[in-house]
Length: 288
Image (tube, rainbow, N blue to C red; front, top):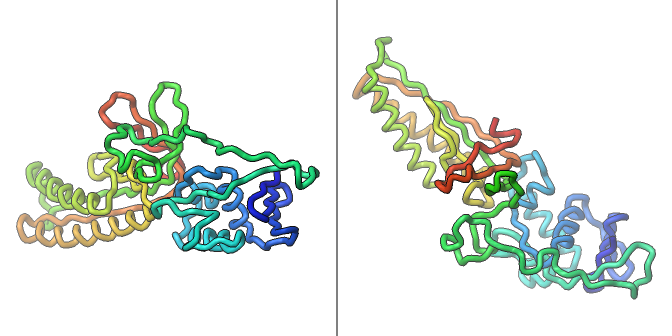
């Protein structure tokens, strides 16, 4: 398919961009980015969606997407200030806003058909309660993901997810058995500190197990820097546990150590359908 906008022709079959018949050089990732935006023209595309499309199962920095957007704008004669072709939406994503027409390869330049928006009037917030949405529309909403069909009728979303796994171990300094009340108090103090750190970086406590927990970054709140938030959370938990362990040693001769792991990738998350906000564990390569 050849997409036509302004004086440009974008050929997805030959993977070529022309300006008034003159070829425009594009790096492969920049071409893929432009293709995705054009094919979803006039539709909000989140940064998370672009990461998933361009770098599936890979971890890349924010600079990679920022570079591709800048190169794409340069190729189509746009810039971050004018934004007459690619518009930034509240620093959360992008829209290809230039009018687009299309024609089949081999047809004449006059045989073009205006392409309507692929999602006319169907875009809606994915948040379970629109009243909680920031502004009530997808560009302003923090709860974003691709809605997937579910046999049980529950909400299922495909997300770019960063998962933080944390496990703690309490041990007596003098090799004596720990009293259950001591263990309980240690766990309570640890959980209180960890909850404060997780909330500060807007993580979501997904699972609790006997000696640890799992936190999601990217669900239900989608951020551009989920991996960075998870890394800062992990570092702060390790630092906080080191300080807390010193207090445990002085007060009750208990030493506490913590292990933390992080992984990022694509996952599908679905609600249990009970109406209480619970979700099934994320399905993907990284949460396991």
